[in-house]
Length: 59
Image (cartoon, rainbow, N blue to C red; front, side, top):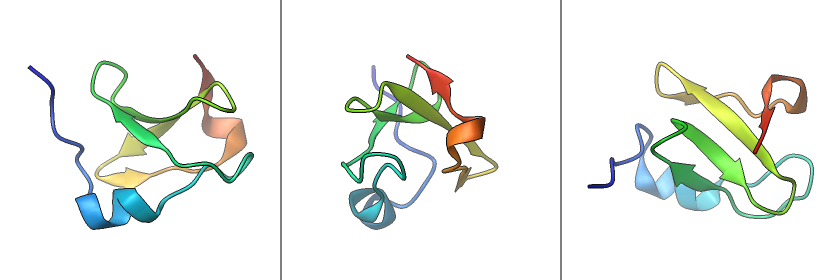
């Protein structure tokens, strides 16, 4: 069963990767926003996406 993103779906549709400017997708297993183009997973802390490349982990 997939887990819903902890951020508003409207906001999720607007967010893009700061490195590639491509859309992000929610990955429930990682509990992160993933940029497939950049190969990075951005954490979400207390419902707030942390869209800093230095905070992202490689996927």
